[in-house]
Image (tube, rainbow, N blue to C red; front, side, top):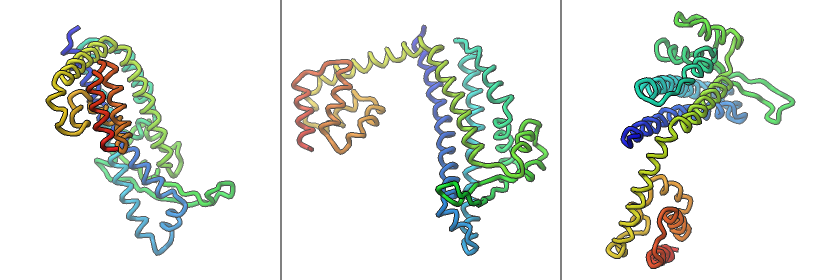
Length: 295
């Protein structure tokens, strides 16, 4: 197995995480606006006659977030197809159950097709009519219940509507609960990509081993170089700056929890480094003394 080929495959898989994170970020932003509107205190304020302009402003903002969300969902689907073609159709290894899973979970799924239609509607026709309704539930601790909905009748007039999304809209009744469909679709997507990632761990076992082994070797070289040259750099910069050649960016992120405790930060860094190479005592003493000076 060629290391460069293995690295190329793993880099493609890692780059795909960007589309997934983009989808997640847009989901969080859309849901935050919906939750804001459904908060009882906010909802009652927005429903006051004198504040209807505020409700209109929030609904407009919500429309923008919905547009971004359905576009991100489409980008994720498209990126997934490109990734599959580049990694699994044009090259080995084989991921032969992928297309069947996509067909079952998405191509034949009315909710998925509805989200796809909604993206087309938002981009090529207009933003759907979004409204908010209020009801009172004596059994609920909240009392007043607020719901954000999309008008079904308006969507059914679209000329781009196909059979599966049309059936989905009709099944929802006159109004479509936006939060409900967004959450259900999110669970569907996350479930699928968890399955994909689990399968990739199996399929790319050799690739992952080669890449991880290579990075471990490079990390050990960097640590040994750091040890040999430490005396020259001991008085230059902070501990965090001195260790940048031997700690990965992700390690700095993990150690951020100790940003206000230099001693714990250094101990954590030493533990990570010594999972590969044992540091000489004099270097550990020097690093700890620097940390103590800031404590």
